[in-house]
Length: 89
Image 1 (cartoon, rainbow, N blue to C red):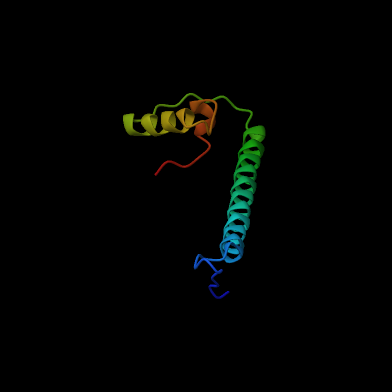
Image 2: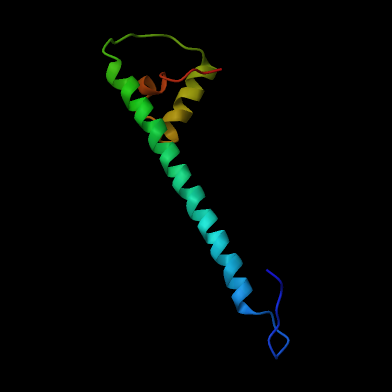
């Protein structure tokens, strides 16, 4: 779109509204994608958790324990046991 001016010399609000509308649409699409991605990840974790039925006690080093705690504190998992579902580099 080309810039148009009204009789007062100000930018035409029509062009501004057009770009704001396009940015808003893009933002909505990004938000939708993020929500769907989060739901997909949660679903994969839930399926993996359902398949586990053995209890096992393990020892981990301090760094691994800190990382497992971070996963729980971030809200991704309810417990350190659940957080062991992921691979810790």
